[in-house]
Every structure is written in structure tokens, then in C-alpha cells.
Image (cartoon, rainbow, N blue to C red):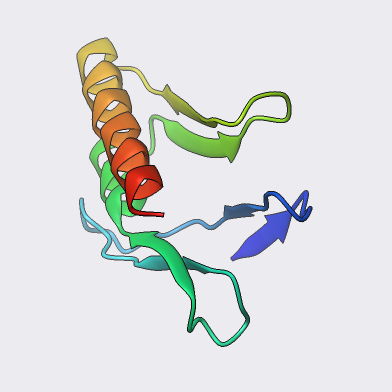
Length: 100
């Protein structure tokens, strides 16, 4: 796992999971403190979505630098699958934002 572009308002975190399985159960947690006591959000949707794309695509979730939104980018060779995953991820991000 790595992170970059940290500010008081955002951080970008990325990782690569390769298990040989279609779904890779990787959980994530975002908290306001290092002890992870004040949890803002958590989930596992991206790892599962990446597994569905296989080696033919990628997913990027990142905070906008100009707007208070999370950008969802999905690339792959199957247009229908890419659109389906993008909609699922956008819904997951919206749900996490409401819970925060």
C-alpha cells in the first residue's frame, strides 16, 4: 500500500492485489486518527471490482483537487462491465460519504 498527495482535507491511497482469484477481499478503513478509533468510512468494493476486470483494466478513485467530490475512473476492454463497475463504485462512494 502507498499513499500520496496528503493534505488536511484528503489523501490518495493505492494498492495492488493479486491473488489469482476473481475477488480479492481487501478491507480498507479511513479514520481521523492513527489508532483508527475515529473511523470515517470503510469497505472492500474496489478490490472486488478490480478482480472482475482481471488484467485488462484498472480502477482509480481519487478526491478532486477542485471540488468536494471523489472521482471514479474505470478502464477496461469490456465497455458494459466498465460502466457497471463505475456505477457500483459511485454508489459505494456516495453511501460512504453519507455515513461520514
